[in-house]
Length: 221
Image (tube, rainbow, N blue to C red; front, side, top):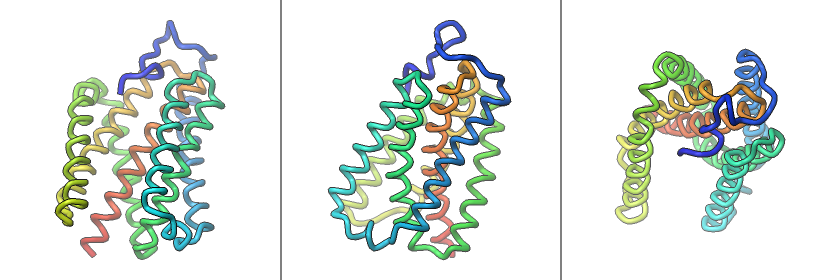
């Protein structure tokens, strides 16, 4: 997605510059905040409460909250506004995570977290080394994701089936997005707002990656 945030340059981005080390640290802290909120939600919100919500009500609320949050953090150049938008994404994602992990053994969930962390670190490293490569494949990633979503929805709601290969395809796509978003994060001016915006994009990549890895590992066991 080409947007105002990630088109900022050293000449047009507003906000006080910070060092790259502090910038990267802030990205990590914002990510950790999102993961902490999700962990608290899993620990404190009963699965039955989420399961009792009407499916359409849940989906409408989920997409409305996520889209509103994405709009805020992509369009704002004020860090606190972007952070509020980030939380509008974190909370509905947390509900989904809560619903999904309930169906798996806690030890498997921890294994999936470790694998996701390792994959994320590798892709961030590759994103730092080969930013131009990931930038070139960004369009292909977006198209592939759209096709996969359409195919998966058709399989589930029309054919009533689900092919495991789709989970692997989604994992590959979001691995690409982690590399792309990390490389993109380090190509824009290091400001507090840009750190929040970058962390928000990476958060969505990592959570989607985790959910698919958990599904693959659960099926294998």
